[in-house]
Length: 266
Image (cartoon, rainbow, N blue to C red; front, top):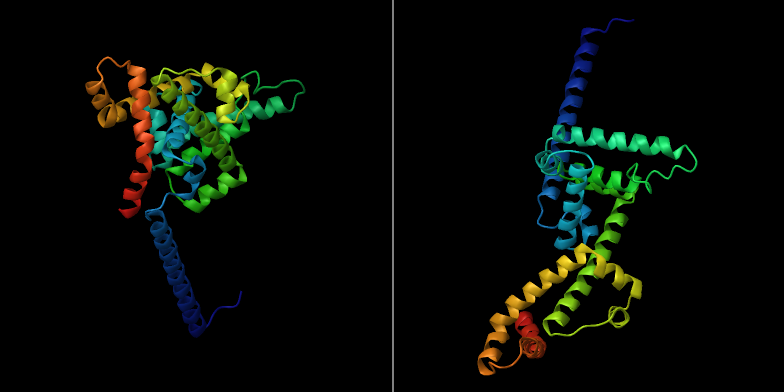
């Protein structure tokens, strides 16, 4: 190998230093741009498929329950894995997901196994969903979105959110009906919601639906009592409670245009 002259060695050293400085500056620029994007006031794009806070919270809770019940982890471990920014807090759950994936891959190579249907293994979609959840609190919006899209988890989450939104809307309608002492049969309610009767039957059998009905009943009860119900009851003390609620709902419905006008002016 030819020995460099002092001049060539000095020039090579200068190029190396300049390259190192350019590298450091490029890193500083990338980090600054990424942090500015991460710290903006808008919601992170990887949260958009959840549609709203209720769907987001419900999905987060179901993933936490899965980690605890199927993975056998404590609530503290699950919480750290899903919320802490240190990668070390994800390793135990990630190792469990790899074992689940290993079971699935092995069973997929054998005909007639159907491991997911037999609950012997988690589906790839569920494993991917939890894996993306582990990454989210570490940061890197575009990187997380890329993995979401590669694994179709954004579509999976949007589908779950849309199903929950439909269930929640139906629960809100049923809560209003119950407060007014009204009942709709399966077919009538299905027509009201523009869904198949089987959807209504499935909803009414589910714990999630009953919990949302109870939630909406409480919300409407608190709101209408403060706004209308107590006044109606004081003026007409013998009026049955369902009729008081019917009148309260009617008064609320008639007030909506004025409320919208005040909101638009504000």
